[in-house]
Structure formats: C-alpha cells, structure tokens
Image (cartoon, rainbow, N blue to C red):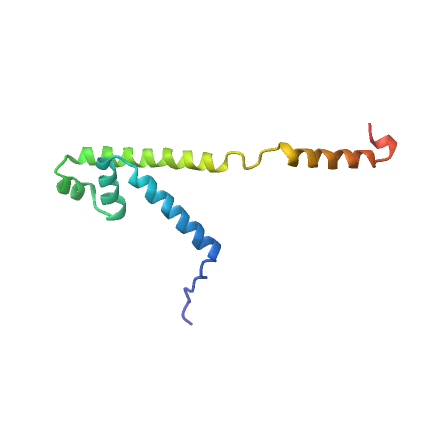
Length: 118
C-alpha cells in the first residue's frame, strides 16, 4: 500500500496572512541599502553560494559574508519594529473597556453574601 502525501489546502485566512507577510518582507528588503539588498537577494532568493556571489559582484568573499550578515540584521531589526508597532496598544486596559470591566467586577462583589465581601 503506497503512502499518500496529500496536504490540506491553506485556509483563506492563512493565505491572506502569508501574502501580507510576503508584502511586508518585500517592502523591508526593498528598504535595505543597495549593496546589502543585492547580496541578500543573490544569497537568499537566487540561492547562490558566497563564492558565486563574490565572483558576480567582483568583491571578496568576506565582503559578501559581511553584507549578508548585515542585511539579515537590518531586516530582523526593521521587522521587529514593525511587530512592536503592530502590537502596540493591542491589549490596552483603559477607557470604556476598563470602565465596563470594573463595573462588572463591582456588581459581582455587591451581589456576594456579606461574609464573602471582606
């Protein structure tokens, strides 16, 4: 009996999330300095080796390694900032929401028998 390797299709929500992440990553890659972006694309997208990249750009292999490292570092930093910005205020506990929760807690306390309130 042959094993099947069927995979479930992605849900529309996951497809949308993946597309949104791809757009964010592409935008952040586009924001890299040209030298870093070029090396990053050649190494990560084109799957070129350090030596192939160095030869194409006519730079030492050490320069390719450094630019690749710096490109990834800058991407991590910019993506982390984007994540921080996106989650800022997500779970704020203030305003109308806070007042509603406090009112609900106080109502429950008021409904407790006298000996349980203290």
